[in-house]
Length: 334
Image (cartoon, rainbow, N blue to C red):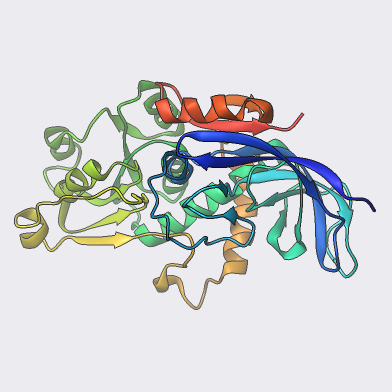
């Protein structure tokens, strides 16, 4: 087997994108080589990295990433493709298998076989990049853990917010989806949610009989959304913070409802499992559940924009502008 050329997206400075020519070596023992079909840009985390809004000293948290947050950096973690070469000692994968990986945007790449997930046969492989976001959304749902019949407000209907909306509706929760973008609200309504354009206290009170919501999930990426999330939950309510704010400061007023209402604020991060689920759940069970869910969820409707890798700079410029109607930006590899 020979080394193959590959194109990879790098951030070389804040708001500066370059497509670099790299190589993908033949797979060694325990490795596979994958030809990408499509990858998804993370509208929350990647936008922070693209803008240079991440602590430059923060360590990278995936073995497939390269560089540093001080730039340059090769970033991304939602890519799907087909296995084209297999190294010695790899079981359970065959050439031609559609797989998902937590790998940056790159046309051909080689990585350890245990870092790829074989996709279900009944899933469009171009949608396999949603594996990472569905894994995140499932973790958020486990951290929120609503009881049947409870009302959950989800602040932000980007990709992760819309996935959480779909999952919680399947679990029997009553969902109030909050987002200023009418296109995103229309998607949430199509999935079965009640929608609001903003966190309107009067509307929340009317929808909950004056109690407030049982759980609020903040997944908008906007620090300013956390205070309304705290204010809208009922006494002894739960606020799940699923956004990563990077270095953006958060200012809160905690002397009123938060204090007297005994409100709990909890972080949700996909790197850990909800402790209440242990030992019944482990990472293998979560992976199997995500793979089972992928063909059942309405994923194609979330892709609003598609760009070839050669137009990566335009894709990130669009992401930076966040125009109305943008949900998921996909990078395609011809």
